[in-house]
Amino acid sequence: MHLHAIVSCSSFCSPMPALNTHAIRFPIHLTCATRRPFASMSHPGASPLWESMWSKGLGKGEAFDVGSASGTLLGYLSRTPKLDLAQGAAALVPGCGRAYDALALASHGYSRVVALDLSSTAVNAAKEELKTAADTEAAARVEVCCGDFFSYQGQFDLIWDCTFLCALEPSVRAEWAKQQKSLLKPGGLLLTCIFPIVDKEGGPPFAMSVPLVRDLVEAEGFECAELKEQLPEEEMHRPGGLATGPKTAFAAWKKPS
Image (cartoon, rainbow, N blue to C red; front, side, top):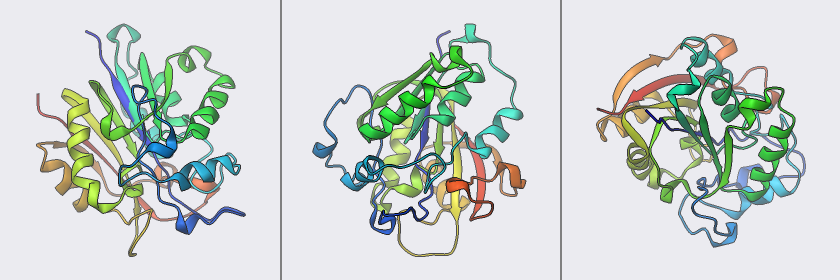
């Protein structure tokens, strides 16, 4: 059996020197198949400001960059058996940034991980990051792509949505859920890092909540396979080197077989 998985990670936007992050519109993340220039993206979730932020010099651990794999993902992986490469499992990470989480999935036994991002500069940063990975075999199984999540085509066993949803305009949330369903194989899992859980208006990042995400995915027939609303500190999503920050929840949603 040949399995596929997809991972996504647009992160929390905290202030970064010399960059007006409050004006940034987080983009939708693109796929390898798209191969279109960033400037040509017209989807409501996309913005050239995202590429601008990367191109101005986004360092590791700055602003929305975690600097390593998300503690939320690592917590999930610690609770699940490592996969056998012979299974051929694949994963997708939309809004992958430097592909820290994509590498973590590959190290857990996914034989193919697609790390997808809208920003060409982010894609280049991900490729450079993978060159420094200690686990060279896992890094070789990560496919870094520049493309549009909403037009991406494929079938995957797992998708990791790490704050990708909070970066999108509310008007495309229903489409986000439909596309997640389209990209997953029957019985596949959509893992969601629900962040930031805060009381605020506007964005991005937009405030998230478990009920908001639940309503979106259940409308597409997903069933809740795991929900953790009270995470230990080490499993909180902490971008930009933050010691503390908004609350995080984790949920795994299963597409019906």
